[in-house]
Length: 162
Image (cartoon, rainbow, N blue to C red):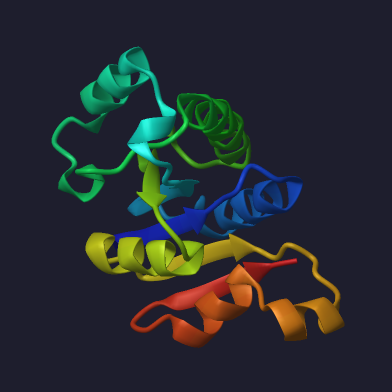
């Protein structure tokens, strides 16, 4: 049975644990589709030079969700390396390479809302995310992305991996 899974990652060891967990859970389902997803912070076009603007515009391609948004290319490259590491981990636990894709979104402001927008856009049934590890006191006052995802997600299962 086809099952679309979004694995929200931030490049941390905690997010690699979430990747490994998702891989172990869904490796036995040959019809599972796993999307590694990261939100790059949007920056002002004014902070980039002409070559960087040209390179970003070329990378946008057909993605309407990226119109008028800019980001640091080095952040995207760093996540590309992380996606490679995460893909290798998924394959190691039994997920077939053709079941795995990766994607960066770009968002000004709230990361959780960007993840939830991607869940809706991609019609994902399951969202897997790592827990950053804030103390209960800090989480109470500051909140956390995983807490907000659990609270706000609709129409999908949310799995928070410790």
